[in-house]
Amino acid sequence: MMATEPAATLCVDCGGGGIKAGVLDAAGTLHGQPVRIPTPYPLTPARLVEAVGDLAASLPAAGRLTLGLPGMIRHGLVVWTPHYVNRGGPWTRQDPDLVQAWTGCDLQAALSASLGMPSLVVNDAELHGAGVVAGTGVELVLTFGTGLGTALFDGGRLAPHLEVSHAPIRRGVTFDEYIGERHRRTLGNPVWSRRVRRVVEALRPVFLWDRLYIGGGNSRLLTPTTLAQLTDEVVVVPNSAAIMGGARAWELYGG
Image (cartoon, rainbow, N blue to C red):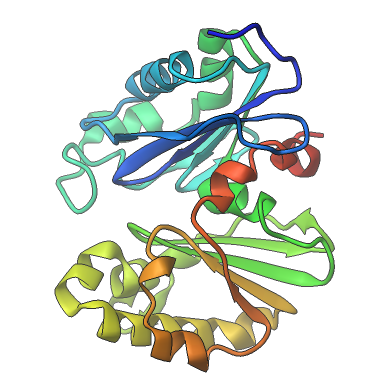
């Protein structure tokens, strides 16, 4: 590995299907290509920490870590997380032992101790937001992947996290279930894209944003017809924004 650069940031974006990592310099420039591994299941906090260590060993050295994790994260503590509490991953059986292991886990402290560097653990959509928000007005980030991720900003300041994905969009169906990856595969991209547009229209009067950013791994699968129907204040951003937000996240959330 290269000599440690104190200002370099190791950024890790954890998803239901994969874990991606890259190293950024102080200006937010990526050093080399990011690396990705399939999310290993069953996934305990200790196994995730080990996986992050393995990823770090394959990348240029860094002086700090930013990690985005799905679910409700408060001050580095995991209040609740999806996928990882299921023994075989998304949509499989929930394991009580995994629920117990993840609930209240101080993942930020565990990563700092294992990797020997300051660590910052945030919600994965908040990590995405750090890579794209302009810092003016009310900005909402929606990420479409295994499920729905959200992050809300006002003048660049992060609002308390809301798990909008758990709210019902229609009787007995949550946003996560309505536009998640499992249903995209079943419905096909055209029908799924129309659902994404309905989600945007359903959330518009709730947030009355000045700008909406649509990202996540599945944003690239939106059909041209749906993209053309989105209004001017809606911006589709690449999934790489999550990795690129790793350095800026310390400015926005690390103080």
